[in-house]
Length: 274
Image (cartoon, rainbow, N blue to C red; front, side, top):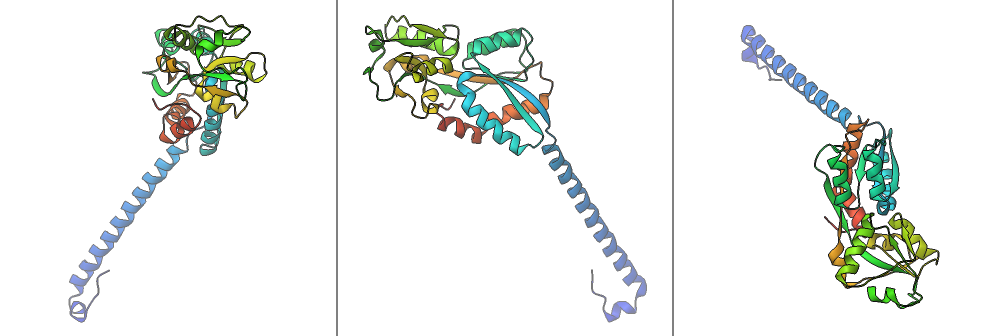
């Protein structure tokens, strides 16, 4: 507020005018502050508006990391719940196109996502968020001394592969073909987790799984890198589904998976940057 001196006392009309202007200025500042606070409050409120439940269909190889990421997401957004259905991407894609209720789909390769796209069940252009390469899973210490894909054909060596329609299975077909190795496994599994479990339980000597599965096994298996793995790298796309009953939450979760903080978690778990 301006200081009133003695000369202004001799000019009461002018003084009153100055005071009136100062009051108007203060009122204007107060009004602007209130509007700013109101706008800030609205933005804050909208950032906390997420609520409800979504169901995410995700490739089996994502189970450990996605569960961890969902727990963090739920803590950051109280009142939200993320449910999962993990399995072979081909099976999940078939369920989605047949009308299974789901909000988000994260596939272990692009071809299974394209199946869902062609059926008109995605909302936009699916985004690749990580990549993954195959590795040979063997018992700790590698008792069979398996060093190459050719070693998997040795007499008496039991091998598990994913079914050819599953992303890890189709990648195995490419890798074996590139290495010119013909292999007949003792079992074809419905997803990569099942193939890995066969090694962990000692039911087979080796299995072709993802590098991230080796990392996630926490020492229950060892991994053997082979030269033609680079010929069968899988890209993982994610998208919100048209059938989502909570599109706002679904979009927020997808955005979270695509964030740099989530990428760091995925990279630490053995996935590769897209």
